[in-house]
Image (cartoon, rainbow, N blue to C red; front, top):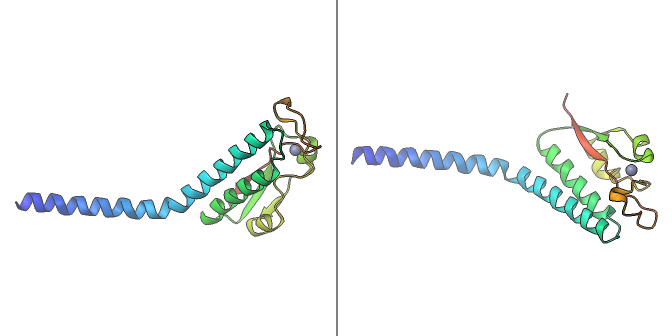
Length: 134
Ligand SMILES: [Zn+2]
């Protein structure tokens, strides 16, 4: 009986630790999945030859919020295999500035993703925020 109680106590402790860890991670998981969700919506818009920029903007915003939650203060714009306009737009931003001025997506992007053709002259901006860890 005593062993059973000890085991039960141990079980309760483990459960409470797991719940605490879950609560602490919950928001970052949510921000990450929201960012992924809006990115896939942007891809869907692009395939349907609709402007993907609003979905890309929301996806990038959730990415910033996720960084902000991890106490990251600055981000850099990276655009690997993007267009010439995006390569010129590389810059370092504080997360607050980036949330305010929303430099991603680059509205002058001309990247022709999967050669599907630009949507009224709008490309599919591949820029992403990279955290700067100092
Ligand atoms: Zn571009």
